Length: 417
Ligand SMILES: Nc1ncnc2c1ncn2[C@@H]1O[C@H](COP(=O)(O)OP(=O)(O)OP(=O)(O)O)[C@@H](O)[C@H]1O
Ligand SMILES: [Mg+2]
Image (tube, rainbow, N blue to C red; front, side, top):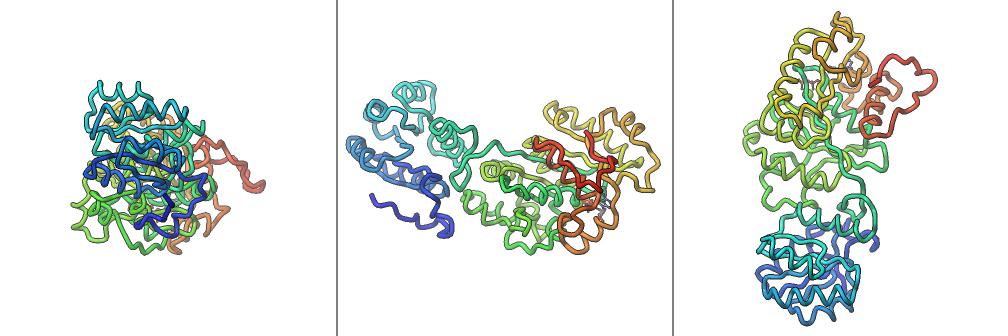
């Protein structure tokens, strides 16, 4: 079969180099199950549907001619024939990854398929996240790379999810989220998305002077037909390379966004971006909690003053009730050196009973200037104290270690773990 561009894949993105694409051949005699599976595969940008076959007995020939990277065998039309085909494929093409699909997801069916030679088993109807995970594993098994499937067909390391939550209003969450996101996006190896989960009053879009076409509300409205291509198109790209998914424009649309929607969105974004940054509300909403549960790090932003530190204690107490959450919390003190706070760092640590993970200096001029200009610090004041601190925080969080600051900036006043 001559490969052709799938009809609803973005023409700008279907021309990936063939080595980056997983060429897939599927066999399923039943139209009723083959169609949805086919449509799901076509929605994955990294997949090239090389061949489709409706007869088990013809598939060996189809595989010979089309030499796919992966074959998908749907078992339900005739389990015995399908298992025999899997055995035959395994004999003839040792190492060819086979993905078995069946509505019968019981242990016995899974075992039979794996014993016949299938490498992965998915229960029908197949869900996109599970399909992507399985494709990623098959790619890794074949290529020996230790990474995850990207929408452009490449593999990469596991994505990192960072939630940013404040201990009171105006403490600096959005400033941190936006600037951390833009800094992470500077590394060509990264692809970074910022999701504004301050659903009512968030202003990440304003901070970056973005006028988005779509928001989280559009994503929530289309949740049932949400795939990677649609989701990626819904994000607004900033000049720094950061992709942003803003909060809904209309307040009444907040009700459209449920935590299960967010769970699905996070699953898809994880498969697509190397780092996700969430700017959370300060209300501990179900969506905030969903984001925190999905996070690898929760940056709890505070300042050296009483209300903020008291709230840190309260928040740590609440988060501490879920062991998995409390382990991930890192306290960030913002605006260190500002005249407003007379509480020392040592006193703050004693009060909250946890080490301070990071300090961001007070840098009113740079921060406010960048905010008013609607640009990130790395554009407005690339050598400012706040920018260098946040840049280094990004490096530390992502395991790249500390960056050597420019010589004249080497003052050693902030940024230590
Ligand atoms: N390190 C800093 N030095 C000086 N000013 C800062 C610093 N961080 C943030 N600010 C300023 O503090 C103000 C509030 O910051 P920001 O909007 O980021 O806080 P927030 O926690 O997101 O607020 P909200 O509760 O409205 O969501 C902004 O004017 C910002 O410029
Ligand atoms: Mg904010």
